Length: 123
Image (cartoon, rainbow, N blue to C red; front, side):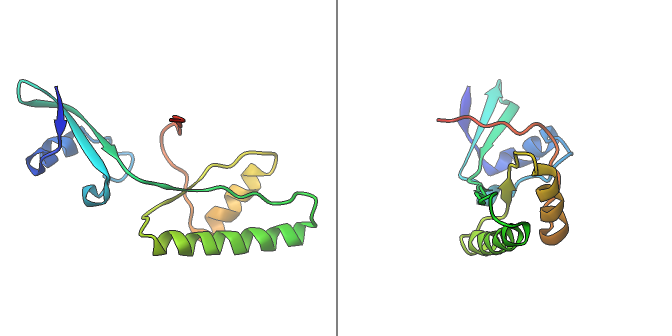
């Protein structure tokens, strides 16, 4: 049976939580559901609205121009996410320069590596 979360579920849900990432602030979550069997909590799912950075930069421009463009976009994107009340900004990097961009985002803006396997479901 799946039901809506109740505050009395918090302790049980915390005990299920994998310690490799921070426990979510449930007050900032959009929806929380709990799987129950004979009044025992078997699991929980937290639906949280997240922000994702998608940078599209013209690779034909000089390196210095691309770097300045990325800086302006990153700083403005971070500011706007904070203004909208997001507590995280996700960046999924691809392409031949992905590792270089990852290092820049970590060094300049405090991005960190995440634990787990990132997946997406297109709805």
